[in-house]
Length: 150
Image 1: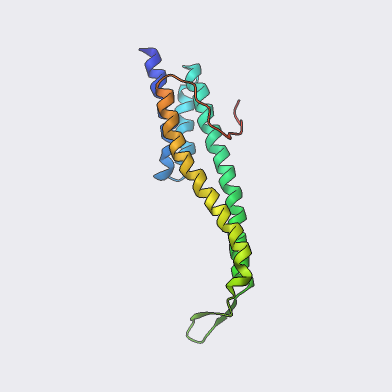
Image 2 (image 1 turned 180 degrees about the vertical axis):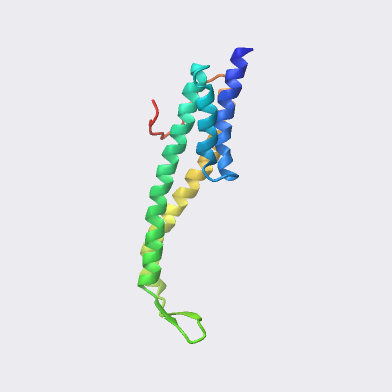
């Protein structure tokens, strides 16, 4: 009975990272709470909790890097090649926008956004897959994870 409880707790730790879709930073808050309250009771829960937290931190860093690539490029390319002017009635008018001059930078930004979408989609399916594997009492390791907690 005790082994089933630890397996369920480890599975819940993985699934709790899906709270990111309901609560900002829920993918950190809930796994940390479950792991911190149960890590001393089971080595399996401790190992899987660290795995979930390391994976979420790694994805946060990867996502942050991609956003820091995409957003400044888009803003720079658009505002650098656009003549913005205001008229008396406070309407914003964009004059002389040349898409040919911004296409190279926008391609780089689009690639970064595309990779971000791939990462977030893969994250969702990996969380489900990990929860299924852990519920079968299999030790699961996420790919491309930086080991912050050892």
